Amino acid sequence: MIEINNLTKKYGEQAAVDNISLKVNQGEILGFLGPNGAGKTTTLRVVACYMPATMGTVSVMGYDVYQSPLQVREKIGYLPETNPLYPEMGVVEYLCFIAKLRNIPSGKIKASVREVIQLCGLAGVIGKNIGELSRGFKQRVGLAQAIIHNPSVLILDEPTLGLDPNQIVEIRELIKKLGKEKTVILSSHILSEVQATCDRVVIINKGKIVADGKKEELQSMVRGGERIYLKLKGKDKQAVMDFFSSQKDIFNVSIKKEEPDSIEYELDIQKGVDLREKVFYWTVKNKWVILEMIPEKVSLEDVFRKLTIEEGKA
Image (cartoon, rainbow, N blue to C red):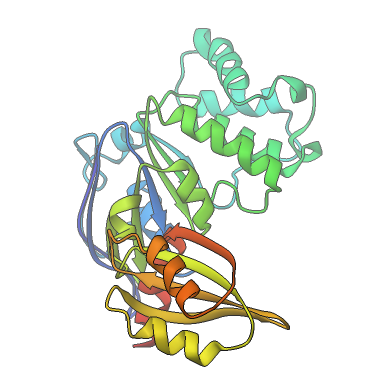
């Protein structure tokens, strides 16, 4: 378990992290989401005993990061944004080196290395130097070094940064597998990564936590929570906009795309209201031809934009 209380980290007069409080439960995969420069990496560095805070307290598995940093480091596996690898070392050589740094008894090092090689899918590259590996395999080695001492807590800062789609899927599945046994904080600004991997999401913006909850709970923060994409034949857009804007269960109508013979509209619907049948009959009554009608839930991307972009303009 991780507990963060009133944490502040300043660089001069600038607060990178501004009085945040957060609790991460055991066995939870937490997505720590925010735009670049929001304070994600700074927060994780404080938790991992990489840097001190200006104010506030942080504890990991009951140990305070300031009073008991060695005990905290024993409990944590940390993959920073910049992967801590030595390209001239072999994969096995490097993992044995990390095992020694982690004070794993010499008689157990080989078994620990074999275990993380198997878990992280590194068997095919054990004869290579790290500098010869692809970006995806380097990330796997980074994960292996983070878990070689079997930590209770795993902190991953942008673990899929720079990977191709196939590599991202592989790392994502590995993180989900690790999350069955460990508490995981996964920092990212990639929405799809958090959506696919995490149980709970915390959004940070300008050093402050602006949202915290399950993905479904955060989606309900955006007014409405339901949406219909409607593609109509013809160019009578003003009549369509005026009509749908007048309906009480539709709180916003916008044009998503215009084509030579059709227009795509976006209807934001009050939460819990299913208007598909009504929309069909309305279009028939007005002699508008439906080419497509697609219902969709408000996405995590909508929540993210609302909390980090729209509020930033206010």
